[in-house]
Every structure is written in C-alpha cells, then in structure tokens.
Amino acid sequence: MKYLSLFFGLMLASVSFASTLEEGYEAVRSGKLEEGFAILSPLAEQGDAEAQYGVAILYKEGWGTDKNPEKALEYYEKAAEQGHINAMFYTASAYQSGEGVAKDFSVAAKWYEQAANKGHAPAMYGLGSLYYNGLGVERNDAVADTWINKSADAGFSLAVAFLEQRLMK
Image (cartoon, rainbow, N blue to C red; front, side, top):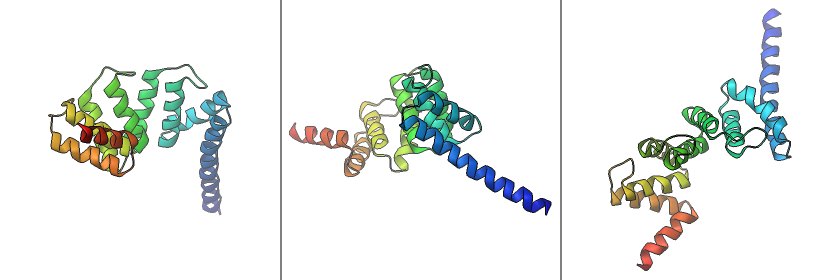
C-alpha cells in the first residue's frame, strides 16, 4: 500500500510539473510576463529544457525580468546541451553575433551543425554562411552550397533569396 501511495504521488507530481510548464507558457502568451518568468524559472533550474528555453527568451527580450543577454545565453546553452533544437540555433546565433558572449565562430559552427543535422532550416543557412565566409570553419564552397541548398529545400526564405541572387549574377 505504501508503494501504491508513492506511485500515485509521483504520478500527480509529474502531471503537476507538466501543467506548470504549460501554465508558464500560457502566462507568457497572455502577456503576464512576470508570472510566466516566476513559473518557468524554478522549472529551468530543475533542468527542464523547454523551461530553460523559455527563460532564455525572457532574459533575451527583457520580458518579465531585466534584459540580460549573458543569462539568456546561459539558459539557451543548458537547453541546447539537452538537445533542444531551437536553443541550439539561438546559442549558435549568440556566439556568431557576440550577444552575451565574445564572438566565437567555431562554437557557433558547432551549434549550427548540431541543429542543422536535426533539420533546423535556419541553422542550415547559418552553417552554410559560415562555410562561405570561412568563419570558425575552413572555407569550403561545396559544403556551404550543400547546407544553403538544404535550407532552401526546407523552405527557409533567406536561403531561397540567397540562391536566387547568386543565379542573377
């Protein structure tokens, strides 16, 4: 009986955890940014990748908390390390642009590649552009073309526009 109570307690805790994440995102969607931040922050600290991604966005934009690019990157990286594809992309973007961290194109390339390999079209384009410019990777037009074409095939408009412009030259 004791184990049955423990089992149901754990089941309720996991249901409560899931609805709390949902409640956090709902608060943000409805404009209750401070409330959303207050709900998502403890979940992010507990290691929930989706909550970490949400907290990163809130820090990046200054929604419900002070704008803090360094903290945003910290949470993007935590989520990225757990395989969160959008967090991988934004981690790469931060390292490419130097937002919240010193520019490091090789780290940007690493995160773009991980997201690109999971099918993230903007990351494919980002990785291709690094290869075209030899930033963080050895310049390689063939590899760049492959990634830009994959991005365009996935419907990413910047990649499509890039290829159209190249054809006009």
